[in-house]
Amino acid sequence: MEKTMRQLQQEVDAYIGQFKEGYFSPLAMLARLTEELGELAREVNHYYGEKPKKKNEQEKTIQEELGDLLFVLICMANSLHIDLQEAHDAVMNKFQMRDRDRWTRKEEEQ
Image (cartoon, rainbow, N blue to C red; front, side, top):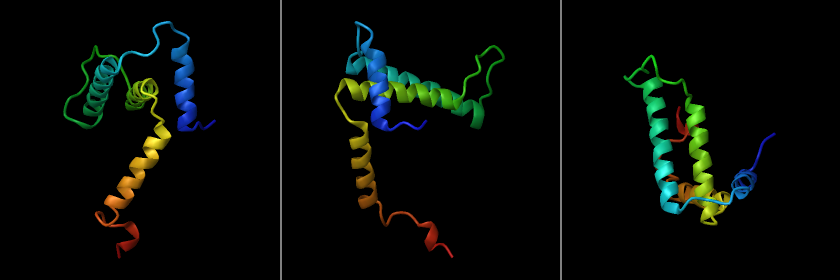
């Protein structure tokens, strides 16, 4: 079943809402976001870079790390009352206007 961004945000909010502690502070979540980004970078480096995993390192996937990053990003957005669908729509509009002539479109290649 496919989920919308709003459904993802609601699902995370329901999960966090069951705990008295609730969401971490924005600063703590920024630290967690940075930590998860570092773990993603490490996995990308293992798969595509020159740094192989150590034999005793736990096997993780880029998909898993992207999922962790998405979860923390949704937590941060929820705690700040940011609708990620609206944020996405705004940034896509910005890119479509600002960069409309920046890149070579596929249909232009011939």
